[in-house]
Image 1: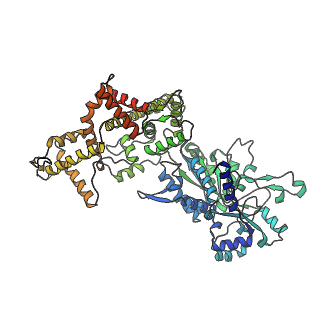
Image 2: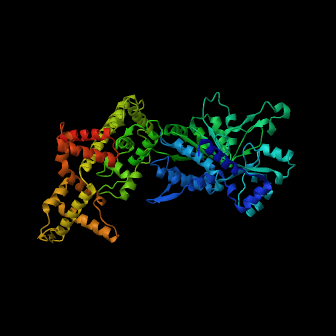
Image 3: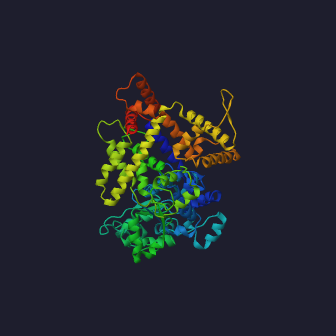
Length: 631
């Protein structure tokens, strides 16, 4: 289909969503399915659940957020379970303002935007359908037409709960246009839309002297007041404030705590009682989820002010920290770059990872756990197994500092520096060194960084560079090894045969000559020495490997060399050591001979075909690793 055919198809789909009927027909519809009468909080929760939930390591991961939010699974789980789920079940939590509090560029606004876009799409589905009194400026729930005295019987019959009263506009229309006959009151299906101001409101603070409370609650229509003669006549009032239009959906308060106090007072009764005051009318009912966001310093200033105690007690504060996983931080940078017009510039493997390592290190706090440094902690947080530490140690570290992730370098700074590296003229590719150099150059321009922080950050750049050096060497050395996995597995199996014979005081059989031989002590030590296993500790290390093999066997699993972190490191280092001289000579020779040139070309091809490099960064990597090996 061309563009206009797709537009026509979309318009036809929208037309199919249209439904118009009387209140009586709406009641018949609810008898079949009462879900359209759900609260705004329940609608948001059902929308999130509709995308699916999966269990990962005992935690729930909500797929609704996974395309845009990375590394905040625990914060998202807490947000959904403790606020949205509880609110959907009509617990008292729904009578609270949801305040997302965290550092700048931590994802707070993205979460709110996702919720708004999700509600818009959900309202176009059968399970998320929203029905409102036709012509109501607040798109209110038609069940408000039921008189208070009759509600208990109706609720029992339909299996719904009715909360709230008719808005002043609908009260007058029912009386003047339909002579009080609720059956005839027209009902229509509405689609939640921020652009059309249906079910979504957004309030952004500005100068308190010029900003009017009417932005929230609507205002008198002076063009009609002479016609209707009273400010308390609903026909002379515009119900067009953000609180009016957000009814049935979500109200976003941007930078809420920057608002003048008079704008926040309206929220006191809205959150607790589900109504607010506007003009010369009785309290106006509203069913909306109020979500606000702010940074930590403003929140601390807010709670320090005793005058704010009433509003503070009506808030549920959800900390939204920075992501603390390197792999997820990479995804954040990748997502932001993919949205730009710089996709034609190749980004070398590990370039974004190096930036992510730097970022995560600035956000982590030193643990009191013995033998655990920041780099090991960073790796454990990212899902790597660290020898000597277990899942319980990880959970202990994660709960050690409640404020971990609430400070450090923000993603905006890093993406700004990556952008400065990308934008250079005549650039085909950027690598990890380009990115780290750009981050370092930008530290002097970062106004909020103190002298001490700058020194720490320079140290973290050096650590990130060191991590990249190891990755670069392994990448090249792997490329030099033909069928690396097979070579590693062969060496691994050979090692296992020898340690089994050693521990069991038996001999091994030569596969070629069928001759019985003593275990190859030289081979075993050449592998163990790679990771510093001493002569005195070798027996314990070998026995530990056999115990691990036995444990895997009992569970019906096959023990592979990468299942043991230290053994994997030893096997790889042994292979790399054997190849080091070949790699060193080949990569550092300025005038390679025919054989060396052939090997370089083969390695470059493998880097390009199998590891995601381009010709430019593949050659740069080989030169860089050559210089590292010659140091």
